[in-house]
Image (cartoon, rainbow, N blue to C red; front, side):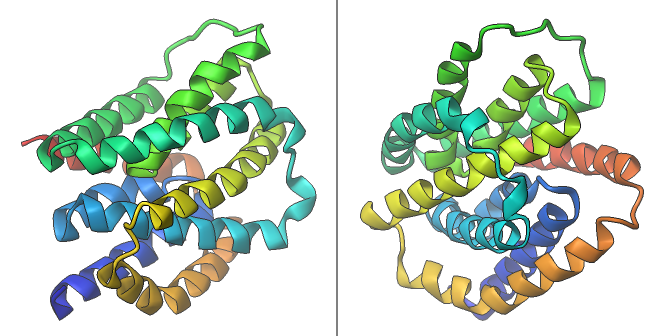
Length: 239
């Protein structure tokens, strides 16, 4: 990778980590499309996986009392089954197809949050398995395992505090398996590790700053703008 690409990649990672640390989500949704445009899918996916694991570990160390794995175990089990299928998709699918799928995912998830449709209540917790399986596929291929889990939590009417705790319990173990899958599949190339090494101090700084900003920024307004930007990124990936 050229120095300009490395600089752009580190900048993208820093911004996406800051967003995740400040608002609790959005790192992969921001980083994946931008890094795909800068360095390609096969670099973007394992790089975002490594950074997501680092970020999740750092946040959990400071907030371990909030973790609720018990409520998320069905999602975790199903995701672990889906991750290998996502890795196969990453290895075999044409990059142009991957970009279009990622673009559709960004547009669909953003429109869902902007319009806030009235969805039915999901009474059966066993339906966590199909949601978790799809999340695993998306996580293994594009690190975007969050959207199906967020939709499931919305259907289950999780209260805000339970929602945050359950997501923490879900993301850390699945991030470990996603990053391990990328390593075992040979995606941890010298380019990936080089950019990751440069990114580490900026990731820690972004987590620290984001924790401070969390209590000061108007969250609702920022998130609305963020989803509008994600729609634009989704369109750029599809053209």
